[in-house]
Amino acid sequence: MRDFSKEVMAYSLQNAIDFGKANPEKILPKLFQHELEKKDIGKVMPLVKETVKKVNSMSVKERVTAFSKLKKLVKKREEQERDLVELPGSAMKRKLIFRLAPFPSGALHIGNAKTYILNALYAERYKGDLLLVMDDTIGSAEKPLIEEGYQLIEEDLELVGIKYKKPIIYKSDRLKIYYKYAKDLIEKNKAYVCYCSQEELRENREKGVECSCRQFPVKIQLLRWKEMFKAKEGHATLRIKTSMFHPNPAFRDRVLFKISEREHPRVEKKYRVWPSLEMSWAIDDHLLGITHIIRGNDLMIETEMEKYIWDIFHWKGAETIHTGLIRIEKTGAKISKAKSQKEVLSGEFLGWDDPRTWSIRSLIRRGITKEAIREFVKEIGLNKQDITVPIETLYAINRGIIDYTSERYSFIENPKKIEIEKNPGIKEPFVPIHPDKPKKTRKVKLTNNIFISGKDFEKYKGKEIRLLYLFNLRLGEKSKFTSLKNKKIPKLNWVSVDVPARILMPNGDWISGIAEEGINKLYIGQIIQFERFGFCRYDGKRKNIYEFWFAHK
Image: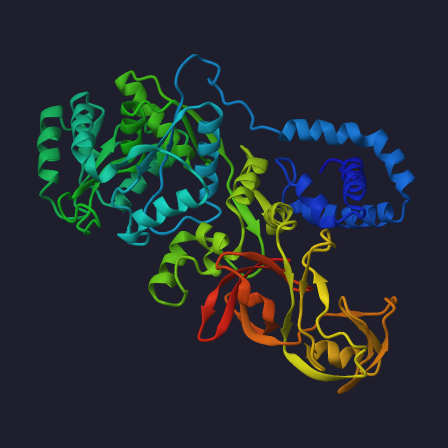
């Protein structure tokens, strides 16, 4: 890992100058780019915290002086991050055409949406076309297509502002096109129908031995291809002819078509012979005029096979850019569309927007903006290696977007009722709606009976505390007013006229409590911050309880 100390110091100084105090959460996202991986997180975090502590102890003059010597580092990185890297072949005078290739098995999650957003960002940058091609070949029994998957994908793309050229293309409508090119491959003596079992094929591949089915002449192969449409599932496959000495055994005579008896959600049982991913895309990328393919490193062998097929037909292929997968570092969840499908369909999850799915729609419902999601992907860019990014990176970007517009309210978990003795005559105090907007306030009703958290009560019982934005008390069942002076003593959140509320957390748990009366004026979808708790999105009132979804701290 390279030395980040100067960059950490530069960003800490800039953050302190801009906001009066440096915040580690604001520094961290600047560092998690292409070169910083999971193994580096633990090493960098102590450095960030130590540097922030040092910067916050400096005077304003000392910060400005120190930053003047390091600001070139900030400028250099900002210039690097300002835009996406150039794509190969983008300088040629032609219309660039990109494609989205979602498999309709459920809603998009933050991991697989990354590639789609990158394609969209590049299409926008180069004023190119973006095609939406539903990659709905039959799939597998372990990861089946579902009827609602099509609509879910369309909605998710809209949620993150991805605009594509219409009409939508469905691979399930293009089977006859694939059949035509399959026949062409057979006639060119480049493909053959195989009746061998998986075990036989695996053994032949490992030994570099050609399958006996491969030896039949073209006329026989064409007859076998025709018979394949009446054969039982698993009885036959169409394989491409490659060198049996290819260094990767998995590339040797790969499957191009297989038989499946499963019903398709769009075309039902109209087709029984289905193409592989690489076969269908080799044909479609050519026929649709795709100029650039941005896909994950996990599809390297499929890309190689596509190119192999293009060469057979003497087609100029698209520029293919592989990007590493991203893993989101967080607690207690595995991001998987297949796993989420099982839990949604079984009823274990609330739906495709359950926060435990980490789907795009769940993030939006929590209050993570589409702008934050797009910027998160843009900052990662075309990472060549698989990387792990802390979820705090996304949260920090979102926080920067929503913080200034999010009004503050009070929420009390496990409320404890206390009585105020000798109230100094304050019945309707004005409290600020945001710490950076001191002139904008809201009026709150104050009675002699208020609520604080039971945890705070036990911790500070018998001690002098300050009610946030109010006055000081000697805390007890009956709390005595002590002073209006804002001393350096613990400041506690409180609620007077209360309403029942609950907050859905990312792990699927509900936290119940009470909130101040002012939340009855919120509109559904409004993002607020509960003081000392975090940012939340108001989701509506159900059974007289105000419900919120937790975004982040």
